[in-house]
Length: 120
Image: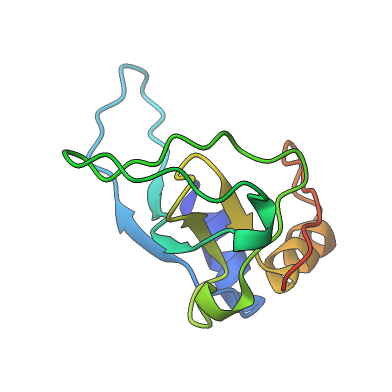
């Protein structure tokens, strides 16, 4: 993410963890990019798995359940200190808080699609 974008989001009150990227550009124009750290913090609610969750792999801990069609977040597992995070049980799913979505829309950023999820 561009440093200017990170600064705008932070000015809007968004809590992000970022680090500077050590990149070299072939062109003469360099871009100041930041790596957004998206940590695993929340989980899906158990009601998403009517037959129960699969047992975790003894070696890596991964559960084999597919992502439910209608995911429901477990409110007790959601962080209060981050506005952008991944799910612990589905690490490819990135969750943004309502505050983050509002800031992105208010600042007019494009290229991001949000889908609202229920919380139990």
